[in-house]
Image 1 (cartoon, rainbow, N blue to C red):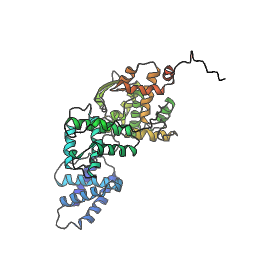
Image 2 (cartoon, helix red, strand yellow; image 1 turned 30 degrees about the vertical axis):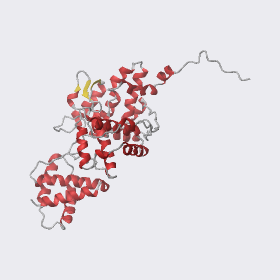
Image 3 (cartoon, rainbow, N blue to C red; image 1 turned 90 degrees about the vertical axis):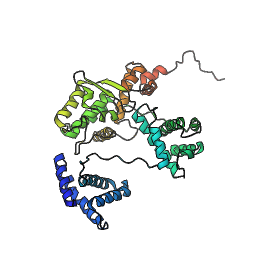
Image 4 (cartoon, rainbow, N blue to C red; image 1 turned 45 degrees about the horizontal axis):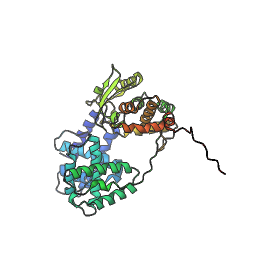
Length: 400
């Protein structure tokens, strides 16, 4: 099938799916680039040319930006048509860090371990292990049999000196190496690696105030599809303290409209959670779903406002919140406490101030470990005052 025929069919499919005319017109630009590239592809059929150009774009790398990504998506869909397949409208995930055959086998063994408490923890650990394996590979180590405690220690120190998230690095490496030791991939004492304590600076992140949340919500145009969606997401976060990743994965079936309750399984902990929602939050979600949400097969509540109507990324609520905070004239720089996650800290601090016990706070926020709720005591002046020691019975020393 000729390129022009493929373009015509893809344009019709995009129009039927609700793509803008600007996106459809952009196909012509992509085809012109393919034609120029095909001048050096003598004797190749259309499918081979498309495949080779797609590989060329992948080799260019992400530095080429959005234009390259849009072209890649377009070519993949042209290839679907060329092969007689159904068009895939999903944006493909970025490939995992390459680590070589030896370490890939190790990754599969680690991934299949039955010790993981949730899928989120497994993915986090695997991502950290991939980065370490890639580092090892560049230093001539081809598989886990070549790992030594000294090499891992060197990586741990080097990586920690380059990052602000030392605790996250330590957690992923420790969990991954302990699993590796348990299944026989490494034979050295993994615990000994992490007896080295790398100093970190722990910063107390503030909670956002009710006044700032009100200003953010007031800056949103609720009459637009995007504004209606973002208003409902932010109000839901303020009302329940749900993590952004759980909000973007929320399904219509998770909402009990009569009981004003949300029941879901958390992405981070894989634990079930039931949280009440206010009537105002339920009305905001209902307004978005009934008036502005695109009718699609997916039952995910919050979806993109442009074709192909994909699910949102877990970072989208935070990005939207910061944008509206800046529109409201608030300082949204890192550490200012005006982020989507700061609403979760606000709810935790208010629960502590109300006199709720830490196990209750932990349960309300969906923590796996009750100790996770202790940080909210630091955000409450009342709770901190209760921890202070009295000066009763202490007399100042009189200097001669």
